[in-house]
Image (tube, one colour):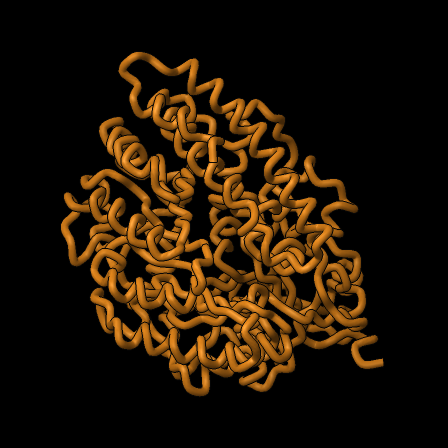
Length: 529
């Protein structure tokens, strides 16, 4: 049969990244748990990947689907393979194994958050994040070991910095690390390897890829994702989208519409996620939004998905606070198509800091066209606007930023207090070294918690985030295709988060004093929804 001697170019990813977790990609957060919490049979069931008998997947992580599309456009017939079925696809004919990774060594912010959640709840933490274990499972797969002498391993994705900065490339047996956007320079690397030419151990893309060189995907994406913009242009020093340059928008005709159709007709998804680093700036040439272009995109996408049936819908994933405050009427109109009938959905927002001083120093573009001194007001107003229009905000706040002082942490706490009554999950992120700053500082999670003020911030932020998540368990699990799994997950979320919140409440009560109004406020609200 085809593939019995191996496909020449095989693409895959770590097991948890390859799974759509029963149709609800948001439920993939469980992959950040240490592997000691997930027995192998449970993980195999929960992170199951839909694929055919040859191992070819039915849905793929969006970034990996883009890599495949670029390779196919260049004349290379690359196959995306279920990491659990590599033995069906890797063989004597295989020349390249490309691995897409989101967290190979457990150093991502998601893994850091889970570490804090467990530690502050006095729950045991041992082992490594399951997502990292699933990466090592691919690297150490028997089919790869058996054919190792005639294939090259290339690893790419947003987290390859972990491998480079830890100096673990050689130890892991990785031939080439690819950094940056793939479509323009990546295919040439693959062609050189297939032609037997020597290539560097590390390849870094020289520039962001022009829109006209970005092909549409040919394998449906997990979560029904369709990229509508790439890059951001706000210039935050620590952020990967910053490295992609100014925002670039994909055309609807013959690009976005093609990927929507592919995901619905072949991927069999019911919800299309219009993916962007800053959705409400679709079509923008600079910082300021172009409301007409955003609304036209939304209307066109809505009309297309509804042509398949009333049960089909559209959503989006990222925004900044500034653009929401700039164009609240646009946000309201978009919500009528994305949150129709009073529906609720999540949207992510990088709040990052409540300190105007840190904002001015590290990310002045985040608040444009407003001033850094206005930023706490902008964040509060933006979340209020989004809440009013059906969005629950997943808001990240970074602790331990370079140059951070206790006064900056106080500003974070003040902002957190202002957000107490709004629908926002305030997840505290340990500073992750990446982008322009990644070589300057490495976060030590326990050390951060040794500082009383930072510990208070992390505990209060997590209390707010988990309380909101517990209240929104229906939304978190609603996209799960298996009703039995959906009920089990809903019960698990409520039980585990209830346990964590009760322990956080005890710790906060112990910290409370007559002057601790912010602690009192959180204690009075967590777990009450």
